[in-house]
Length: 225
Image 1 (tube, rainbow, N blue to C red):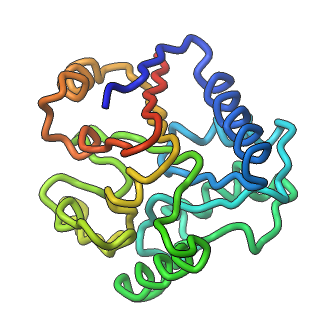
Image 2: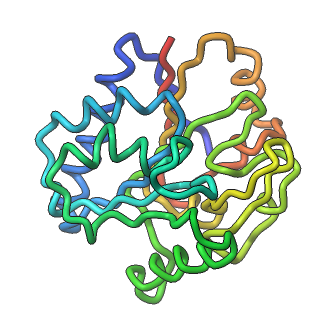
Image 3: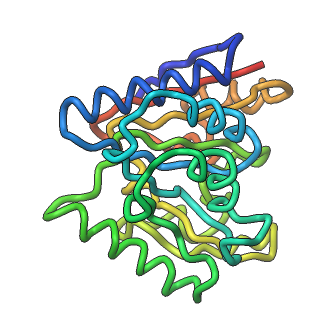
């Protein structure tokens, strides 16, 4: 799939506008907007800007593309970051926020999360309206790190993944779930990353992020300076 590559001079506002537009479109079409949040530093100001937008939060379901295996009050927790920057500032019902329970055994946490998504999906695969992703300096996205077992998963939607580079267990979406989304958007500050991005966009890259390819949806890279 050929991605839409957007070079933005106003990255935070453009990213917030993209998410807001996706929410309005999904709620108008299906009555609900399913949004998967990414971790890292890049989306923090985006989430803060999004909290000020007019969105029907009662009709929004929040998931997380990955999580470190830490408690929800740990400073490394993606959930804690999202709560501080977005979820704690908007009137979203608690039942609409599906947290990955990083404090549990990794295998149990992954199974519980997949079961929760399957319970909402009916007979087919869970289709997010928008999945936000980032890219690490090693080309990883979500917790799909180079050389880790999760890269080869074809059936499960959510798995536990040990990352030897960090000596840590993580919980992550797999390619089957990511590629089922209606829209996948990478949010990335591109400064200093031209070389890796050129390889990713060449179509021959072996980086994990380059393997994301929605089967029946859009793929966008929103790049800030």
